[in-house]
Image (cartoon, rainbow, N blue to C red; front, side, top):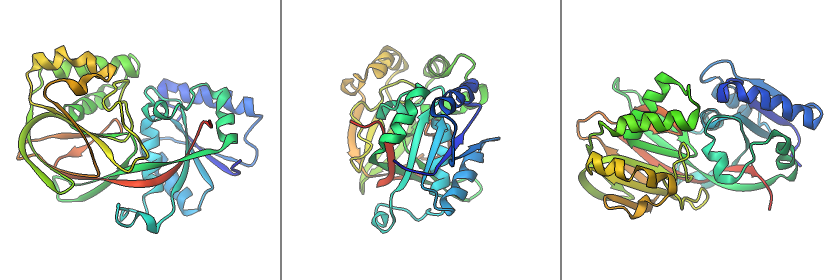
Amino acid sequence: MISGFDFIVNPASGHGRARKLWHIFESARGGIGADRIHWTKYRGHAQEIASQLQQEQASCVVAIGGDGLLNEVVNGLFSRHNSYSECNRNAAPAIRIAHLPAGSGCDFARHFGIPRDPRLWQNVLERNHRVTVDVGKVTWTSALGESNVRFFVTLAMAGIAGDIAETMDRWGKPLGGFLSYLLVSLQHLLVAQPREMTLQVDGENLGEDLYHLVTLANTATTAGMRIAPDADAGDGAFDLVLIRGVSRARLLWNFASIYKGTHLDVSGVEHRKVKCLTIESNGQEVSMNIDGEPLGRLPACFQVIPGALELVVPGP
């Protein structure tokens, strides 16, 4: 068993669900003993806390919340490693982390079968079964010419998913994560316009084309949609899923297939394994969605960092 946990909890996750689940978990395990709990107070606070814990060489950081909180924690842990890449990954040890789902979506936890019941969380930590997990890194330049780096663990998307993330960020999730995301997605599909992008995959130039969505998946789902049903978060590669510039009618007709994970056989959808992707937006404004959060505009470069995290998951 790992000793010396640092719990980072976002009490606002899941409309306050995280705070309630934390108290159930704390009561079930009989307090936190010598472990430490850190409550987040504002957006970006979890990243600051995790960065400090990384500097202190904390034994295991536990993120309790949704995918947004997990993204902040991962970026805090990697904040001093912006030079991380596939080329120099072996020069640094994997960073240990645990994630206990208490948000509205929790796609990362769903991928690894981590239970939502807080009375089962202690067993996950005690069993201390660990797997190595790949991490994605995206680099882009802002409109002001500033160079930016962000790490991700679920999915990175560009196109209509970026527009959806921006709307969700403005509106929040008044109907819960699943239903709110579904309704906003349908709203955007009704007015969807494909955008011209140029893709370079593992050094191969795919040329210019029209795309509704470009997805790099480390895990299988986003907001319950099985966008990359065969994704393996530890295989050292992303699942690249492309939805080309098909008609809005075809998009709507096949929308339900994404929830089933059967869309990969639909005309206009392509799928392959990749390690590095560069996207140019060819003068059009194309938004990005990173781990479900809105994040800047193209152009951008995405790369996988194999086995960069050591994740505590339910044992066999």
